[in-house]
Image (tube, rainbow, N blue to C red; front, side, top):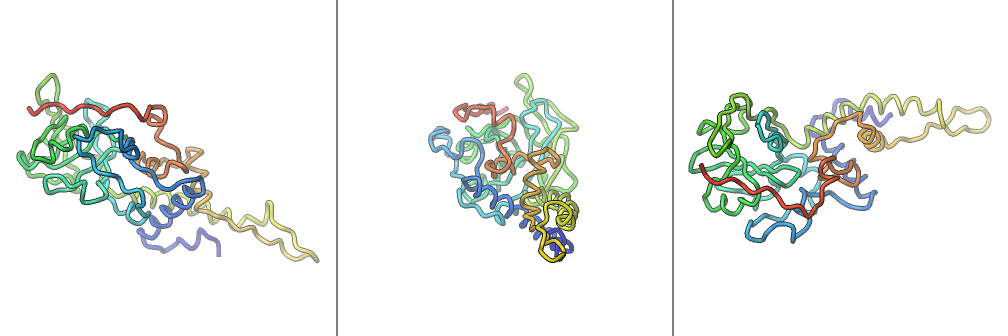
Length: 271
């Protein structure tokens, strides 16, 4: 049976787990395991007073796939219009709720109990916000809303010239999980995998004596094919996937060109 056919009829989570496992396998083959957000792999990168938690270095593909994502858009500060990934351990909890982090390691999203709103701050404010402060660059414009509302909450506010400015169209543009991204990749690859396996005898197949049918070569698809297609730019992979599996996919373009020693942005004061 062709490897691609094994995936047909599989539940969505199995597809995602297969893909994440494939990435992990290839990452190990390239000389290392999963990665972490920018700077988290260097204990001296962040000031100790910021209280930044340690990113787990032994996170399994299954664990990574269940982490939730929130993608924001519409803000004047373009660096905020990114995908944010749920912190992987309880150490990332802040003011009783989960937090969400950029792959760049510059900003994080958290729930502010005092104003009952979701906000985004530079990570240097993590310790202060954990102790009850609500420093932020942007905030939900309305109290008591859930950032994971399927309606994709808009109408956030952003600091502009020292005051809050309303951004009616800014806010959540997508919800999902890390596994969703890999599921999409598997579904895109599946048909190509099947065709590759069925056509293996036509090109490069091993000929057998006495006129027997050629023996089909085995394929590592979707493992090998997915990696190749990502390298070719056929499939678009999120920055978090690239960050967690850098040996296979490479770091996000802007991160690859940046120095790891560059410090994060400083959060604005409370307004």
